[in-house]
Structure formats: C-alpha cells, structure tokens
Length: 339
Image (cartoon, rainbow, N blue to C red):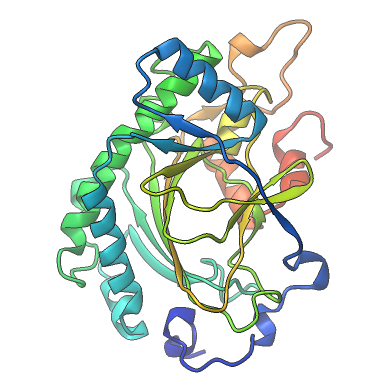
C-alpha cells in the first residue's frame, strides 16, 4: 500500500467507509448517555479533602476531569496548534520527519503500529513520542517541521511530568500509600501520543479507538471536541470537553497495585461527519524492569493478592500485542482467571 493512501488525515473526497475500516455489527457504535463527569479542583487547599474526593471519584468512575491544574492555557493551545499542523502535512513529509531516530523515539502510524498485519483498521492517525530515558536527547530526533515543534513539545512534556506526579501524589495519599510511591521507576517511562481523527462519512460503521483500558499507571488527556466515551455500569458515557480541563483515567498498573480497589477505566473513541478531533494523551508508565504487583498494604488474610506479579516489560507487551478487552486482559494479570 502506498503511503499516501495509508494516513486517513490525508484522504480527500472519501464518500464511504472502506471495507477494512467497517466494524462487525457487535462492535459498532450504539446508544450513549450524557452524565455529569466528576471534576477535581487541584487548587483545593484542604489536602485531606482533595485526596478523599479524588479517591472517591476514582473508585466510582475510574476517571475524572481536573481544573486549576497549573498547566498554561497558552502552552496547551500551542501544543494543539503544532500537532494539527503536523498531521496536516503530506504523508511523505510526516514519514520523513519521523524517520531520524534509529531508536524510534518518534513514530507516525495510522490505526495502530500493527497496521500492516491487522484485519480491521481504526479511523485515526497517531504520532508517538518516547520521553524516556532522556527527553533532551530524544527531542533532537523529533520533527523539525512544523516550525517550533521540538521546542513546544519539550516544554509541554516537562510540564506534564510535573502535573502527572502531582496527580499521583494525591492518589497515593488517598489510598494510604507513601506520597512518593509512584515517583522514580514507577513513573519514569512516559509516552506521549497525539491522535488525529478526521471526519468520517459514516461514523456508525467505524471507530477511532476500540473499547480498551490503558496499560498505564494513569493517562492524562486533553481533547478539543467530544468523541471520547467511557464504559460504566454497562452504559457508554459521553465525555464532553470541559474548557481548559484535563481528563485523568486509571490504567491497569494502578488497578494491580491497588489489588483491585481501583479499576482501570474502559473507553473508546467515536467519530463524526463534520469535525476533526485531536487529543493529547500523556501515558505514565513504569520502567521496563519494574515489578508490577499488589502493594502489601492492600494484602491480608481476608484480602489475598488478586493479581499476578509481573515484570512491567512482559505486562505491557502482552496487553499491547492484541489490544485485549477487559476479560482477556484479566486472564493474563489476575489470579482469579485461568491463563
């Protein structure tokens, strides 16, 4: 397949959904509902109250929006701008700009990184930037076009590192863990994804992202228009963007460490016919050699460990290899499911 036909962002005049993007009927978009999404004010002065509220909404929903987070609105807007400009470039230019690092700290792909092998494609293009082990070193291999791309991305990722640690500290305090439980090796391997979802001629037939939960500790998302949906109590809930707010969702790593007290949030992305959608997803991952297992403070005679002890490299590779739904993921990570 020629590269110019690969990136959906570069398609022109598409009047129908190609067969390789058409989901089977049981996976297509159905009914969704509007519900109030919990909002956390990070500027809350009462730390105990803040920790308790974050814990409560995380247990009930697995996700929440954050306001007064300290991330500059101007920086977010600039990051969104250069990201849109990048995805608007030609297929050839995008691939050329992302081919400079032999270690592949920068990757552009359509649908998933397994595009050539997958039977069903997703209606999106993605740019993946690896921040570990040295952001300053990796940046020099990232796109030089659009202008200021490297400068803006580096500034954004430095701020997101600080923001993510603040969220993790609050979550740790709410759970009764040490404040810095997730600092160091448990959060030193972040990845940054810029997803672009072009308008689709028939959104009922395809998806931007399949139902899944992230293999992260947490994921911090910024989105410009709606399209994100979370699954709760058997219903798909629309997450309409709150101005200037970030959305935080728990991943499988957090679920394992909490021994199931907190659950990874399943979600998907739907498309629309009129407006392109862009999201900035900052995924917090442990280093590959870290051991992922339930924290001892959640284990006792009445509550034994419900999850296997795994090296993170094996943990994430297994969960990424087939993008499993929750039932399949639990067979790999849970003691309560046969593997």
